[in-house]
Length: 92
Image (cartoon, rainbow, N blue to C red; front, side, top):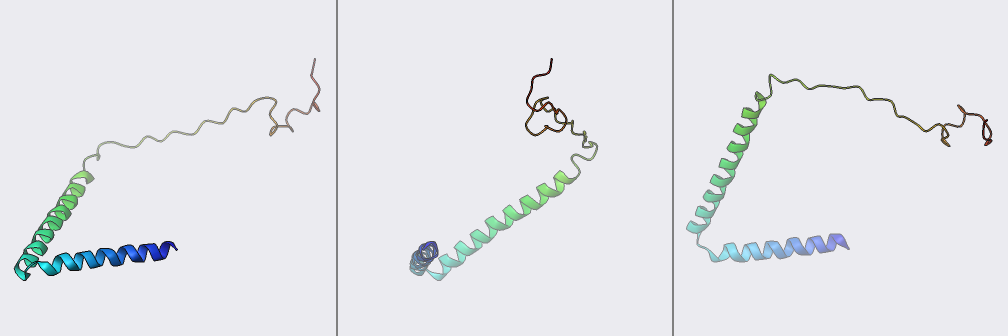
């Protein structure tokens, strides 16, 4: 069911794109492709350069690791029955 819906959406999108691209001239298609290539190329370079810049930014800082404290349980807990064996009676 979902697969058929996805296939219908893909087919509809492909038909619309083919219809839109079929209307423009080959020179305009080339211009659109070059603009898209330029935009994606500049975005890729920006991400690459910013990632390299971020590598050495935190070099002087170290991550501090702390130990986890033990969990404090209640004295009369249903899980902790073996430590307090009073069989449900109140102790004086």
